[in-house]
Image 1 (cartoon, rainbow, N blue to C red):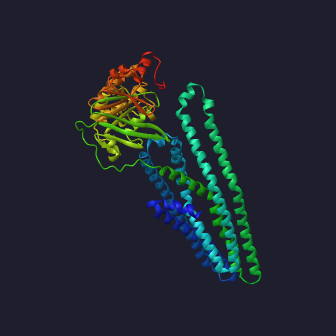
Image 2: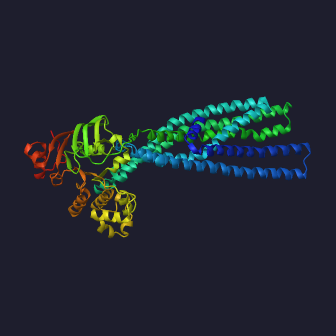
Image 3: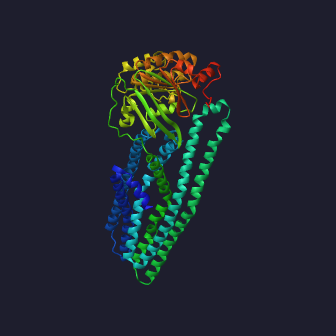
Amino acid sequence: MIGAIKRIISVSGKYKGRICAAFIFAFLKSVLQNASLILTVLMVDQFFQGTIAGGSFLKYGLGLLGCVLAQALFIHLADRLQSASGFMLMADMRVKLGEHLRRLPMGYFTSGNIGKISSVLSTDMVFIEENSMQSLADAMNYFFSAAIFTIFMLFFNPTLGIVTLVFSIIMIIVGEIKYHKGLALSKDRQEQSESLTKAVLDYVEGIGITKTYNLLGEKSKEMSDNFEKSFKESIRFEGKMIPYGVVINILFELGAVALGFVASILYLNGSINITAFLGVALFMLNIFIPLRVVYMESEKFTIMDKCLDRIESVMAQPELVDAGSHKISQVKEGVPAVEFKNVRFAYDSKETISDVSFSVMNGDTVALVGPSGSGKSTLANLMARFWDIDSGEILINGTSIKDVPLKNLLEQISMVFQNVYLFKDTVYNNIIMGRPDATREEVIEAAKKARCYDFIMSLPDGFDTMVGEGGASLSGGEKQRISIARCILKDSPIVILDEATASIDADNEAAIQQAISELCKGKTLIIIAHRLKTIKDSDCILVVNNGKIVERGNHDELMQNGGIYKNFVDIKNSDSGWCKRKIG
């Protein structure tokens, strides 16, 4: 268990000094606690010797009062240092985790890890700062106290010292068995906590569909089952720990009785005097209390250990390498604004992009079309380095995107997605995040170009109106126009439209098309779309299927070729739809 305490100290960083200072104050508290008993023994000794006087009672009383006051001060200082350190440490760790998550590839977030991240933030870190850190100094103090008591008893009387040592060793052995058993159980307990968090998130995110199809009972079963499993796991955890706790309590009682019994024999044999006997009688419970308390609370440290494992497992996820030192150069004559060279990419060991090569000249518009799951959005995500390619090269203005800092790369690209996410903040702050140094006048101008100024001004507080989390208080078309205003303000030379108008109603479509036209003026444009009118005027259309570009050309050329694209258009014109159609 000392290893678990050393582990939390090792990750404490700049707060290590505060935690060690808390150890000192906790130890002083324990010393003063026992000093009160020592003063009592001395007072009783004088009483039996008949040397005690009225003034002695006053001295002993003042001494006891001083011990109590100083003990209260040291308790306050120890708690203040260790508890504050826990909260500050976890605050720093949350910031560090946030910085780390920001640098992870998108694949980590799309692989079912949202529940794990939420559980680490809301359960594991909270447990450490609210439970384990408050017990840290006390635990170290208990170990120190147990060692000091045992050494004192060995010097005071070897026989009593051996009895103390034997029972202390047995308690430590049982306590360590209890601790290591708890480690295995804590792993299952925290993993179930993660499963519960994921189930709750899934249920809340899908509550609209669940209500629509009157599946509240059926779809809540997974969440209810996880509540039941969490309940059973917690009961199982406590149930497995109780027998060890019972054994430790029995050893505590037996140790105290053994000390009292041996001390009685020694007193009757004349080996110790009445004062020593009374001292042992007063101390015999206190001698084993430190080990009893620390191992009875060892569950906190087993859970803390597994919480640290889970935090470290997230922190150990490999980040996208961001060691580039080049800057993307200005547009050069004859150099493509975007170029893919023999790009390959596999997701979960399955190759999703296979030897893709194409280029987009500055100011041109390229459309990526194909069935759902063909790899269109993956190509756009690779361009923004949401993932790293396995082989090949992606260049912007002739510079490999791996050779430039991510910040510089993302300054070159604006992306408008089908599913828009707005933060729980004001409309103004959701727009200005496109360029934080923009003036209010520039934000308003961007809103006007995005055709969202009028509806923003009709909101209760205009630009200062708070929007719900994810933009829940706005319609899909309104959210889309705000996201376009954000991109207009950013003013990046490359714009990617990923199904930006796929789910927009007719009332909003005209305004959004006008907003997109403003956004794309003079830009290099890459469109991912199924709507024919969105793509047919593109300078080049790339047909993607099974991660490969199978056709390329403008609308007229592809229609004349009579290939897959023409089949797409014919299906669309027949109103059969093509989004889910698989190409042979």
